[in-house]
View 1 (tube, rainbow, N blue to C red):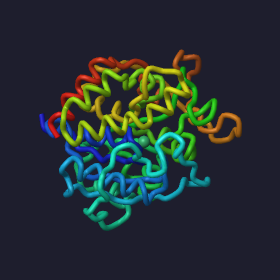
View 2: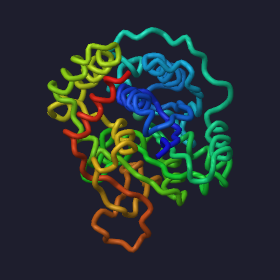
View 3: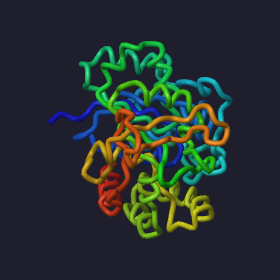
View 4: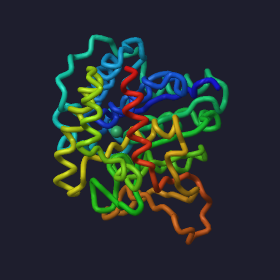
Length: 313
Ligand SMILES: [Ca+2]
């Protein structure tokens, strides 16, 4: 089978960085057509920089990285330096990128790429707020029918929220964009906090990254060390949840995850619950299913896959 063509839409973020590394370490399964940066964890200038730092770390300075939207559709940007540090990629000491940004806007790249490739052959992998993707769908509605699948990290049901009591960060930052994506009719696979909070970087798993003895292994150990401090304090958990790499792991081995095909809608009106993913997990409405919403991950399988693949870089 030929590798699946994807576009990574991202706001790095240490966990985005690990997701990108896992993608680039898995060419048999995944062909990355390009990386599009969006404002989210940190402002756009930093996410566009961080994406290139990671490509260079992976030995892929040839990868096209596009800058995208610098703010949500209708709201001021909310960022998460309290989790990811001032640069978004705090932890390792990585050099400034020398590769340039690709010419053009991320939104135009997404549209052109979908029109250029056979319908259904490109998967979109959003790892941040959904602003770039929603903007592309608004600008070129014809692309919806050409997207094979959207596999995204965002939302929560049983875990409810991390940026507010009711909302997960990516959806909360641009709920109007999320609403557009969830109503697009494109097949969706969602990795909510319910799953990612089971993918914890314990000290044993962190040691395994470090023990690879490579620049990539060391950088991943240092990145996960950094944001672990925040999550351990906040949740009292065993380690930091590795959110975004769940998306990549699904592309490589979907059997690691189980979930339900259900209706998921986005709250855009209420100040109290803005950005909540209202997931009909128990099937109590007759609203049509629009997303496969994951609930469980084989965490052991996930971390052994991740460590084995990072060793290849
Ligand atoms: Ca992210």
